[in-house]
Image 1 (cartoon, helix red, strand yellow):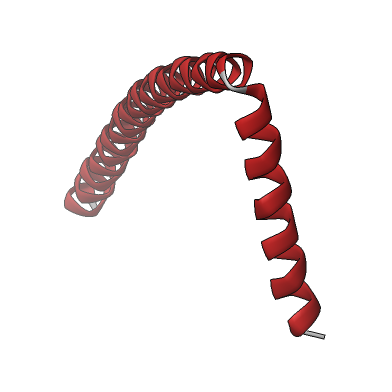
Image 2 (cartoon, one colour):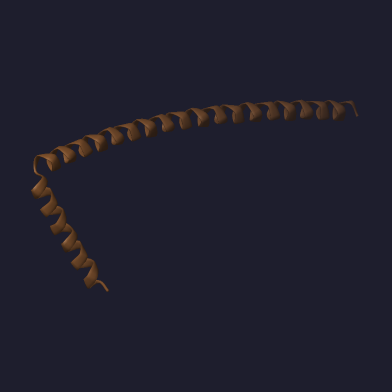
Length: 92
């Protein structure tokens, strides 16, 4: 019986060690996931800022072109609106 008790004690010790190893592995995976999430959020933030900057530059260029050529801008807008209206009307 002493060997059975020794085997059982050894098995319990191994199971406890396995539990500790699994917990450590899960903590490591969690830390890696959190870090990767932060990196991804940083990349998304940088991309969003770059897109916002580019959109603002496009808006400023459009405002400059419209103020430089107001009549051309109005006629172009009217023409495009007319064409889009005709295309949408044909679909019905």
